[in-house]
Image (cartoon, rainbow, N blue to C red; front, side, top):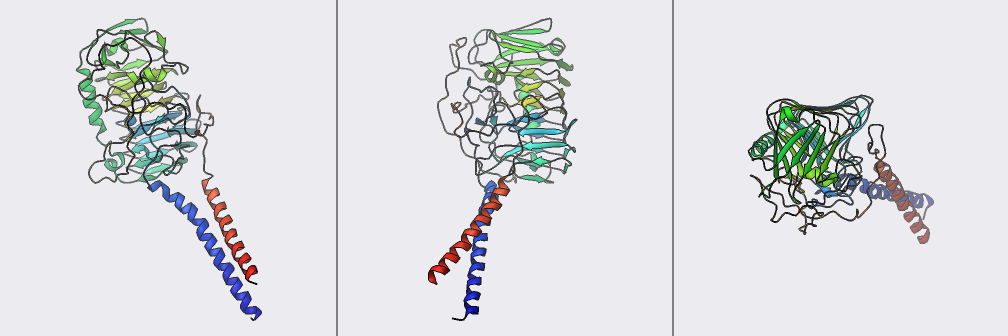
Length: 469
């Protein structure tokens, strides 16, 4: 056979092998980038269910449970500036959202450096903005960092208006969309303003079951006789204003707590400490930190402004459908504000602790269905299991009652530890827990894989030709 013919055939084989190798090599990254289109899955170590009542976790770095409900809601605009650090869980902003840290740095959304570990599943929406999203130069918004358990990754962002990102918007493999309008961007929570208004009115209609006493800067809430619902307390806004210490006593083991704040006066609170049945619960080392945060809700039905100042921990959810809010303290619970919301403390954070006495504000592993015409992404159904019994406390003779509305039926219990260790957070200059380190090595890995597979293809053809020769 002529040499030229052999050389031509060999070259053709090599070219074919290279092409095959490149196809195989590039198939891997293409498959990986297509993965976010498949149904969502919790991250490594994250249960597809909610914590059992009384077993809500303390503060830590790992994803533990799945919650698709709204963690932070602003009915107006949301501004995160100053040295504010992070917002755990699903953030929904009806107006515009602006992230502009004074000294620059990272603002975490969805998963945070250290929080409750109760967060949306990998790849699901973690930031929804009805208006425009703006990120200042020097500020990085990091959504769903470290959530890399397949088939979906990171956290997704939906914006009804435009995205003006002078600083990076990291979604860690999650999707992003803009320009679809407020209803599409916010769905299925596009009517959440009505929800918080109606729930606030229903809670405000509950009669007090316990007594409230203000002494100096301390407010003591003493539970009453056993009832069919939560322990309910009432305090005028002008009497709550300026308080810093909150003590809850004689609260039955399974009871949640509602503090109805009456009157439309603005309220300023600088939280310093909180106690529950004799235990201090606002320090991160408290074994009852998560439990206390999940049991308590302050309902500011008519207040026009709520100011949580200082650098302490505010324990419990805040429901304020008519108020604007200015926050420098860290919050531990749902944060539902009807007007504008600004966080600008030195490293302050909002930790996602669902209020367990309501399915409306409680933990929901599977999100509600979107409104008509809105695309939907399937989510796994949580498995049914028996909740672990709450920690010992005052004994309540009957089952926990319900308020007007609904009562949660959480499933699952806190795992002894994550099935696969979650990535450790990297400290940032923004706060005590810090921002999560930025990742992005996946693309490099895929390129290297393509090159290796291409080389394997070439070698296979060369070996085959030699054997035949």
